[in-house]
Length: 379
View 1 (cartoon, helix red, strand yellow):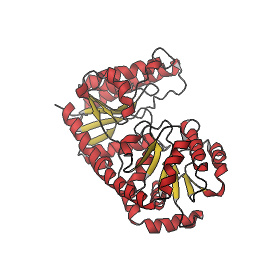
View 2 (cartoon, one colour):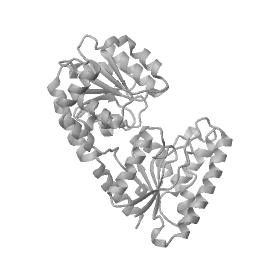
View 3 (tube, one colour):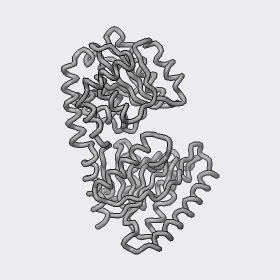
View 4 (cartoon, one colour):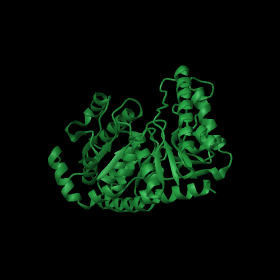
């Protein structure tokens, strides 16, 4: 099929990296891997951070004009070259889709939403325009695909036909991560030499943007947990950067010289660090599902993380890692301590993590699932 793809929160070719941009790119790749022709149909960023009614109205008007232009261009093409479905990724009240529903209605093609969330408390509030637009889009959609199970309770009342609701597990292209894992010894030598890490002690890894809010809270919880296991040997590698860098460094300061900071890393360097580490640890405060958690498991790392959002779809409790109560540093420490002392158990979890990613979270598995969804809406 010929697919028009749009990500209202952040376009897949946006210059600033993020998990949202990463997933948009992966989705486009998965559709292409399934044999579909994918076009980036729009770049309008409809995100309204501050709840400004005037901004939302302006974005709605711009979206309407862009939709009209897109429809005119599509109708000027031969029928065989027009899009056969519109795909919108990540829809919520702060970033509604002002374009796709109009285009799909006017061209008479299926409208598919990949990942949506609904916050009922936003009705009538400062984001009411975006909230109502998101509900209208959900009502219009031929299919709504849930990537984070935590969103399903919110969207279910607005997707009244259960046949329209589908699930897609978080995924990535596992190839570069498994390739890095195969040369783990070499990667460990490189990382150890670069950051002064001694061999013979567990290397813990945390990957996260350094920004205020949930990420900073996760770093603070991580510091509290690791202070509780300070009697055991370990080193912590922290990958990330951002506007809250100073606050993160201050939060981790009680851990002293046990912590090394790599800054932000590109994918090639990051896979090397994943492959060198022994255990991934992250409190995951308010995470949707955690792409870094999935990357860690794709590289054969056991994971200890907070049981929030869709993290449980990635980490299988007691098999590929361990899930703990959210916002509970003591629980994180109590779960981490025995794993630090049991490398054989960690190796078992690592093997299980690799198998789980290959079977359920690799790009080919996502391509097959998306093909099934498109086949259903095209009938």
